Length: 325
Image 1 (cartoon, one colour):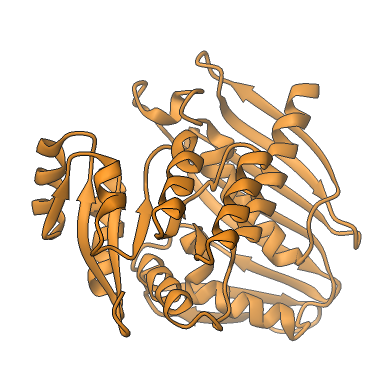
Image 2: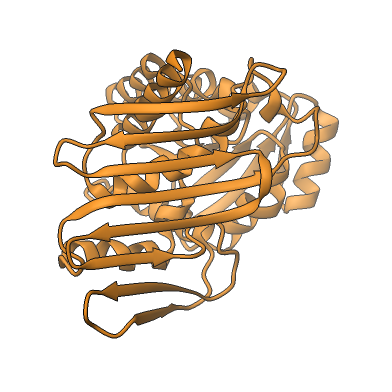
């Protein structure tokens, strides 16, 4: 690692590496894309040319052994995150791991412990946290604009038509919960500022054994309640509504805003509706700027592995509650 830049390797050659991750690394300050890795050299070479990486590795192990790489973006299916993150830590690499961090609480905690032991940075890739609209929401909540939060409703749903997609595989950690519902869980936890203590949930199951939709109620120690929904079998829709004692905050495109401008609406009792316009932004780019800052300046604020662990804990509680219904 140089004093000014973090040199990245991308582990996994899925579509997101082309459409979002590699471009974000190129655009973000203090970041440099060095290599990509796939399970075959042919595919890695093709992907490297496609995303503008100077180096290709035909095995994940070769990427981890590359001494010119400081940090790894892990973009393989959920079921393989823990294995490769821990291997990256053993190789001395920092990690930005695509959500969800892991599929079990024990794996998530083990990941956090390994990175702490090696004094390395581990960040879960919830890119939405880095969008300017969420920075504004956190500011509004910190200023108590809507009063104490009592209820948060969050949802993300879309249609996944490809039956061979890994998100329909139970072995690879597919299903709505760990693919889309986890965004809603993350948003509710962030808005409330606490961790849930009681969960009620139900799921609709696909033939492959994964959930095709998930609905849950999360109860928090301060009295707030979160309502989350995610589906892989529904028309695309997203939203977050944060309700407090004085009013509410509404986000129409909280998770997938693309590059377009968006807005945060504040509705207070007895007051005119406030519309805060947010300029177009790329939250993947901001995420890499943030992670590089965390790696290069270890005193910087960080959404650490503990946050990812807590989100996994909440999602696993939902899964457990689904099995009881």
